[in-house]
Image (cartoon, rainbow, N blue to C red):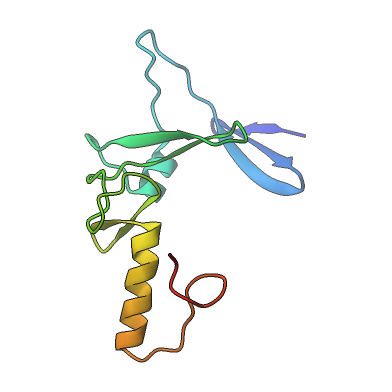
Length: 117
């Protein structure tokens, strides 16, 4: 069952609660992002957002990265932000492993606990 509350459709999907925001697309194809979404994602006026289409057909939105490639290897996919630096997940794992080794921390990286290839 869905109810309309302050511009949001509140319902359940598979037992989990979800909030759906509805917006109208204008004649130029633009949509205004809800204030709550902009605040949570820390998106400010003039910043980029990215729209991702996953293999399962689901669309996602996320804050765009100012840098489009990994600082260490130049990879342009699977990027994350760490303290203002853009890293691919592979380099982030390597960096974590090397940092843990240097600081003598007992952590494991990868499924086997070894440095990923």
